[in-house]
Image 1 (cartoon, rainbow, N blue to C red):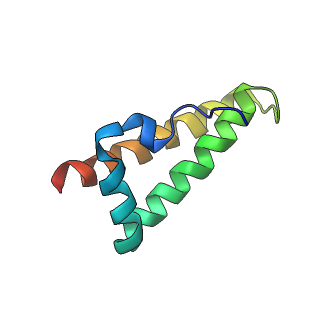
Image 2: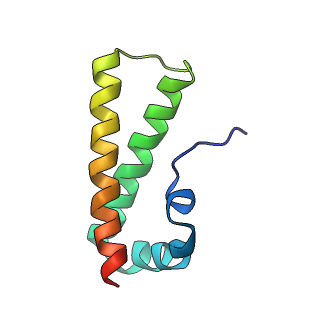
Length: 79
């Protein structure tokens, strides 16, 4: 099993427990985390040429991942 970079636990290692709790108790946070996870997997598969895609499409997904990460951090930093 390969390591997928940019997982939330790697991005916010000191917030792992908070992420777990919020995913169980906050539907909005859970949706953000799920969407981040899905986009991150797609980007990783494109980067490793498992499922290559156009550069523009990959770039758009990277931007969306960054926006989601910022949104997730905003929630994590408030609690």
